[in-house]
Length: 465
Image 1 (cartoon, helix red, strand yellow):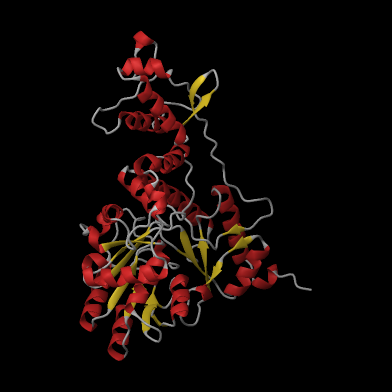
Image 2: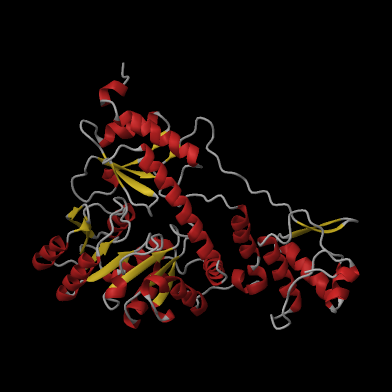
């Protein structure tokens, strides 16, 4: 929007009811940079000229420009005026001769500088929203009601309406699991899980002295009959499972199996811990166990795989107020509280639509990487899913997981052998993380090395003297 009479190249579109006027102007600057109406290096109108055009006093525009400067949106140049700041988005790369770490299961980096800038803009805007309170005050162990309501809104597409009082803010999925296990079991108790399961659960169980019992799986995931057999003969305190895009096998339980598992848990009065780390990635998926049995399920909805690993924020939905009190006590006793700063960033991203945009970008880049997997890896070797950014490589004989891992390590590629996941005898398999590669070219190079190795006997690639 411009004012030709005053020769103004840019004028903010603001509503006078949007709170303090200077913040509305700063928000308009951020929005117009995001949408491309203000480009890098563009000079903003002089403060007095803009004040006259808007019919407001000079000090309001001055405060708005200062606010935009604090957010990192603009910069002042002595004797020249105020300019949209040039953004230097540093491209990630793997150092020459460095390791391609396919052992890390990270969401892939998306190539969208404007969206990356939007993430940083929202973080900078927290100062205006919260001031010093956010940095200098403790919060309740389960998070503020505002942040819990944002979590409920984020989970609504999967769980439906959930009262904010049943949502707790935790220090990532690992923090949620620590608090939940601590409230459900004590040293010596048994928790059951898929026979191939999340290594973080194994680490927590060892730390807490909890026994883990592995349940049989097939190519479609956890077998309900294995769960029922254990419940009939043993006394598990809870079932831990990862029903959607299972880590590491990528299997997704059918609705029929989910219903069977819920019915067994209800019949034997066994709590369920549902780790839905990847549940936001599919465009459509079976209903979570927590939607089928909200009174039985402790639901962990982490943000690391669908938004940002750096936040270390997860939303833990508990069955009722009694369990909420127990879990909050466990949070208080272990970590005190999740980071209020990280929770506030997550809330802002959710409320202004940034989180949805990032999720869409991750989905798009994941699909592109899965197309490369389909093109390069031998048919029938990789078990994966179009919505997953990891793959489960089941090795053809005579390859073993140890031999392949060692050969890949020598070639500069790191993977995770099945030993890290197995609660029983490990299968001959490794997990590939598709998201850690800096780009498509690096992913292609890595997958071609893997394909070439699998195409020859292990002895042919060995050089031991």
